[in-house]
Length: 304
Image 1: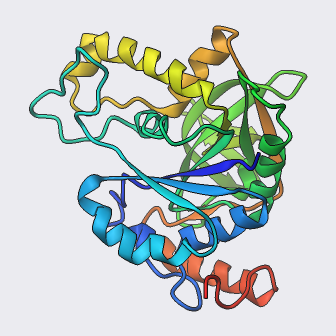
Image 2 (image 1 turned 90 degrees about the horizontal axis):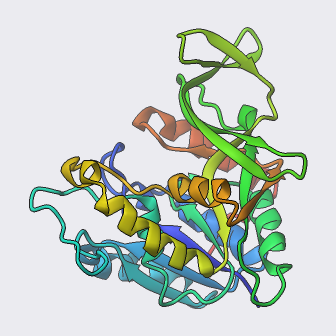
């Protein structure tokens, strides 16, 4: 069974102003998402599911879905503030979505096969789709609790314009994820990758330290775990009172790992991650994509 690619597109560009998923960065106006989908199709993914905001449906169908329809089946699901388990109501003042894992939960009715989750505005690179596609398509029929994460080598995820925030991962001897620690300031200094620790000291870490860039591989049993754990999350008054609280994927993954419920294999990739976090990153991304097209990694025009 071909795996599904689940694209998180409900956050549509909070920091960067405008719909960054729709920003044409390739030689013929291609978006980062166009490259992701091109790579996924090549890696054997058989369906696309997008989670978006309902008020964006029309524009999304016209500008985005129409491009891919002839190449791969597409489905839309919607993330809404009031999409909560029975017995819970959204605080009246809340405007912020409930986070990435809540977005993932919206796929439960349409995804019945192994699936990968990505941010739709990150450029992950073709090798990362190959390693995830291979992992998911080789899972035995009906597999459960055997998940994966693409571990980008931290040295391949840095920004020239300053420090970045990354989830640095540790693994056991079977290369399974044991923890993700969010380091909010990472950069290359004196030829080494360093992060600022809790004591405000710069600590060196190897170039190949796996970093999580929110590229996950799950099977459909993940939805039920999420549904249950989301109830616990909402039952904590702190999360209801804090109008910015979010139910993130690493929160759920961390629980499943620590409970011994599931394993998450870290898949190494040679891909270099890049994205447009801030407006000044944009030109660098345009240049990197052009270099990949010039090198023959991608055709001049992706979806004709």
